[in-house]
Image (cartoon, rainbow, N blue to C red; front, side):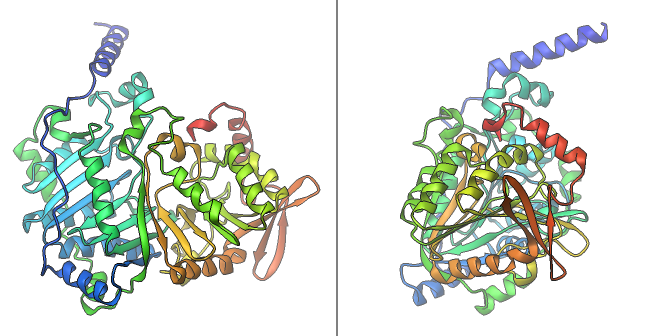
Amino acid sequence: MTSSIRLIVLAATVLLGACTGLPKTEGRARSHAIPARAGTELDRVAVSFAAAHPRSSGFHPLGKGSDALDARLGLAGVAEQTLDVQYYIWRNDDSGRKVLASLKAAAARGVRVRILIDDLGTSADDNILLAIDSHPGVEVRLFNPIASRSARLLGTVFDFGRVNRRMHNKAFVADNRIAIIGGRNIGDEYFDAHGQTNFADFDVAAIGPVVREVSASFDEYWNSSSSIDIATLTRRVAKPEHQAALLAALPKADSGKNFTRKLRRGEVRFFPGRATVVADDPAKVRASAHATETHLAPKLRELTGVTRREMLIVSPYFVPGKAGVAELVRLRSRGVRVVILTNSLASTDVAAVHSAYKKYRKPMLRAGVELYENKPSGTWERNAPHHFGGSSPSSDASLHAKTFTFDRSRMFVGSMNLDPRSIRLNTEIGILLESPELAASFTNIVLKELDQNAYRLALEGERIIWISNENGKEVRFFHDPRTTAWQRLTVRFLGLLPIEGQL
């Protein structure tokens, strides 16, 4: 058989697999969060918080990457009942393996572990997933997976309309008592452990009534027909020898000693406040891109409508579109101060998004929006944990936090970027919280450090200039700072393509 015939046969096989569709989930047993049991270690922490703050939730900021990883490892180490973990990206690197080892160790103690990951975002090896899934007490499901497991790229191409819709949610819930929500995936670059580029990111560890809402959202996704068991999807089980080898290769479980010690001593500070979870319906991946009833975005628009004085937007991928710019103009016409921090061309990891964002800079600046772009050399971590952590001295920083504050009293922390993909295509989750102390602290520190860690954009006639504080001196740039002519030409070309709706 010639190579061309083999290719045709392979393509036909993949196309047939895509047309056949995914395994059916009707009749599958439903699984739900287990009510918190009295007397567990995390229950005692929650009861102590509730005694001091009745009917309130609490939020512990996780700005520094190493603290965010330590908190996840610590919660896995002290969990006694359940661990529900939901992520878009899970790297097979040191951080990814540490978290996986902590979940495996928890399962060995009798903890029920449910892992739900996005298939396209993670692109994990099915053999690894099968090995983890075969461990007693662990269940692994993939969300909206590619039907063909042997030829994933072709499977994506032939079923693009469906697999283009992804689960971007990030949640880590321990014993239905403490949950971590925010912008971080699982990987070295999210925990300041990457040698070259790290993400300036932000999470909160939540306690109190809002945790049950996070668990309810997880259950909704876990039981969705778009969530498929890895063994059912691949139609095979892990070979015992492969399973043993893969599990044995995991590092020894790290217990997250710093977070655990502080938690036990009552030294983890939770800012009290009212809160609610806002999350897309998992059916969003099957709905029309223009439908809004399953979307988180309209709930955020309600908050902008009642904002009276100031709004701070931190979004790494920011493509407001004409409608978004019009909303910002309306806010400015009411006298609302609007400050936006997003990635510069030098710090972004997605040039295509920057190509769409750049066309809206002038209209925003004309309206009086204060626009800042993150420096790749930014050192936001200096005042962590009250806001997002940044790079280590030996690495660059790309902004990844998705956090908005309203009148320094209300705050959104979650997975949602302000771009068409988050709003229309992917599913997202976040917490809307009312905590003036935390919201004001976050806002104050970010605004204070903007001058040092970001470029301020301004209009000089019809020309955009970038103003930077360089060792105490004001420096002006007349094109995107710290970029090459090739980078600028690339984004200019990408901006000509009709791809904004996919970004």
